[in-house]
Length: 136
Image (cartoon, rainbow, N blue to C red; front, side, top):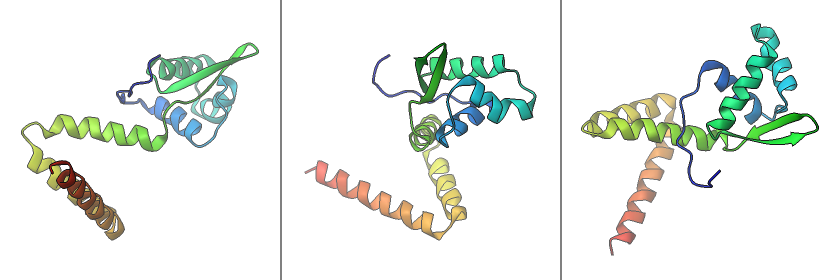
């Protein structure tokens, strides 16, 4: 598999739960994932195995063969996945709707708290400085 960026796919509920389990340091062997997630949801081991395989095929997991089982681990961090996913979604919305998207993003950031709004301001200022340096 290439080392280029992975286009972040949207995840189903079970896929997201599996990724969160692995991002939180949970064991990546199918039986362990099933014990952590599948049993209380009434999901079979085969469903967990299929979900792990699907996430591997989407490029979100890597796997190693250990004895007779595959052990999976996240190929991308939670932060990188969410950053890329938001970037992909917002990028698609920006065509012709940039003003509305920017306004909505600032509103969401404001609701998250003053510290997030201050962080956004600092990021914008840093990007502006980089752009100005690059245009010289």
